[in-house]
Image (cartoon, rainbow, N blue to C red):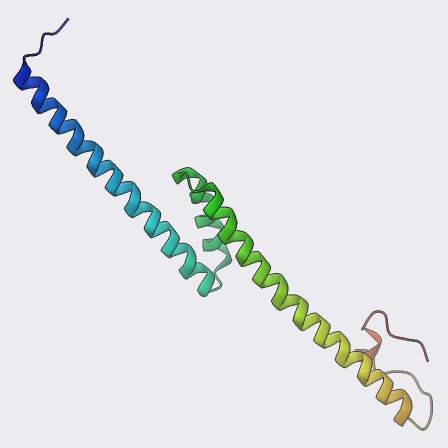
Amino acid sequence: MTQYNDYTLCCLGKTLDASFHKLHDAESQLRKVVSQKFDEAVRDEDLASVERYFKIFPLINMHDEGLRRFTDYLSSKVKATWGCNVWSYTKAILAKQRFLILSPVKSELPEELKQCEGNTSQ
């Protein structure tokens, strides 16, 4: 068993404290960098990077933060897609109705109007 004198224990304690302080600083800096990079990936709409940084959050003990940020990202994508789809569907319905009203002869619908599901039949 190794014997340590008081001076050695004092120096060892200071060294450990300094090492722990550096380790906590590095952890804090890593968390900040991952958060910033995730935000940049979302802003740039880089799906591969979004997924990559999302997977890092649990490794740095930021499970909840990572899930919150990723679900916010997914929610914004669903909202944007939903809005576009509803608008496209509405325009197609209106176009079909105009076509049916304005067409003197009930002929075949144009192909782009047939592709919209849920349209009312002639």
